[in-house]
Image: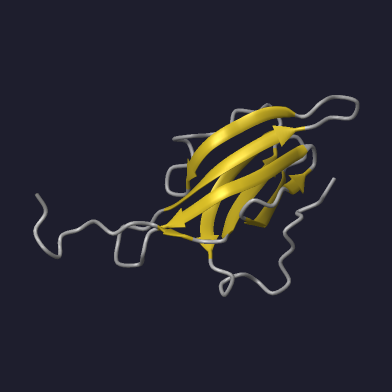
Length: 125
């Protein structure tokens, strides 16, 4: 039983996930601000962030996001590549296994924290 004042702090859901994508072939790295439930593209990947939670400042720092990632190549149907939680502090805990791309969560932001010139599309070929 927890004493009064000893309740664990819950993570706050935030509307934007900051994710980083690496193309292992070209060594191209892109940081993308992805709004919740809006698909963003990186090459052949489509990434949808379903939720992004961040612990309050008085707790041990942690950001976690639930991602759904699909890949679509020309002439082929989209294929699921990853679906699950990714944690900023331990990206290898739940990593996407793909021969060309790495994706990991960096942070969760409120709309006030978002960069003014940020684009949710992340389109780059």
